[in-house]
Image (tube, rainbow, N blue to C red):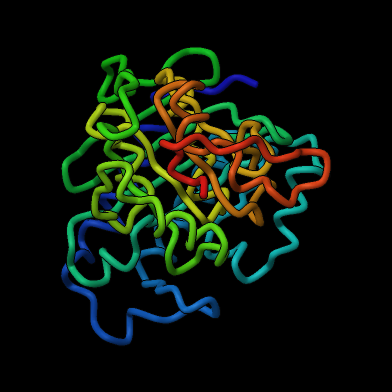
Length: 288
């Protein structure tokens, strides 16, 4: 498969400039809709996804697309990751739609390229600040052409990060996080996974816990984080994120394996067959 990574970046930038930016802070009420899950979708989301779908498939003939808006309406598309040998583009046309719809300049366009369960490349683009993050599997992570590295690990009490474990989290996970969030320096959520990943890539925070694992939110970012030296694993299975893991209960990013274990301490695996729970240490964030 012959793909020019830079050309994909340029395509994403162009589509954002044509479809997302002109509509930002100019949406009419009828151009903002609610999806079945209660999330918002705008005419800009739909336009960006259509453009990216057509142009990415033209760039890589024979490829398929799993875009957020189409997949939300047809969950059978998730089966493609296990059923087809063809490369698959994953598209989040506007990550942080709630921010976008309210005129808040915290949103991103995200794209990943997969083959089966393997994430080959990922892009996160911030159209407002014109920041592009790119990673290719095995080749490192780059922010605007400069190699980037996650923050160095430190003690749990000194770690900063976001804990997305309220609205969409499993009750048990949410309760443990609420009980133990004082053990770290928890930052306010930006309500945009793409921008949380950009904070991690810049070394502005140490960790992030996500409780929704949709592929358009995490296929690009989990690869970027890993290529920048971080540890990105599912809470229940202690393995790398795969695009078909959309129903998992949590995904944790940390600077390295030691800090990942310290934050989790296997507390969320207490009832998982074949994965007995380890005793949680006194500093554990997700432990009792």
